[in-house]
Length: 399
Image 1 (cartoon, rainbow, N blue to C red):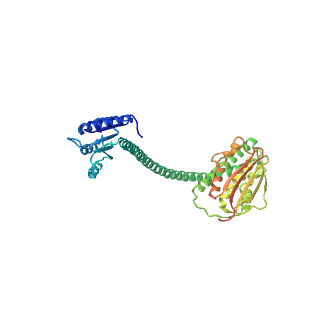
Image 2: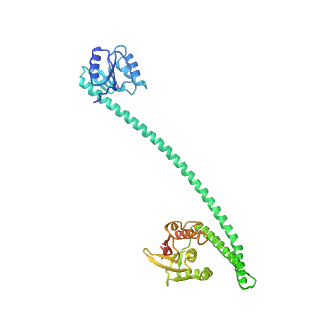
Image 3: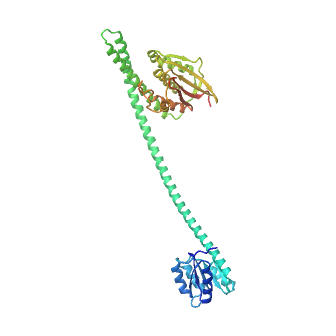
């Protein structure tokens, strides 16, 4: 039951006794009650006081309740105030007329105070619920508008990102093509420098007038050329891997591939380092792309020689895994790595044991890209003082 002093009721009735009785009763119920004796003053009071509910008598001189109600509903300032008619009329057509003009209810004379209170409280509650519902609807509409604006903004941002992505892809392709061209242009003259420096080293060893210092400098030139050649080869391979959308998978003989790397591409390095290499008797064949897999072996074995002990001792092997997969690995006898060093691996331009050995950091990042292109995995197991084991996992047979 609504009995709040801030709830205002307006009585519009030309009968003083009705006003007196209702004002006394409703005031005692906690309502603030205002009253006027005619329709004209009632309209003014309603607009001025903005009551929560109006009790309106129908039978009044000059301006009856129907006209008052009609004017109340026509004015934006008062159209939302609920109106309850007070009437002695029993004619249903008159009641329908009043309801059609915007009234919410009727109270029939003679008035029953409890009925009046019940109807007033009911319509006040309904009105407050309606207003609360309107506020919620308005808030939801505002939220919907805001959501729509946000969605439009997200669509615009998505389109901007898409265009930006296309621009970046185009620039990457241009940069990749440029790097590929430059690497190719450098490769041939560099091969000449490497060959000439190697020949000079051999000649210097046989000569009598060459000092140890001069010979060491020639060796440095030769080794620097090889290092630069490896970088260029890495760039060419990286460019090829990034551009290659589809490759022709084939059965790869791993035993033959490892022997080829050791005997041809790393023979000089192995001899210089006096490396000892123990290879598993039989390495399983896999399903992949031989050219790329050869680069994985080259990288892993050459790193194991660089970062191994003195002299380097390597073990090369493989083990079968579930789901027709094989894990190949190269283990060295080096110092091993701590967790922080392991976390930096397989990222571009990261050197292993940077203080001990200089070199380029493209290799492991290329390995990672190659293995992922072959639908495999690459990783490392290492503890300080126990060496490192680099591995890669490939499918043993066609899918």
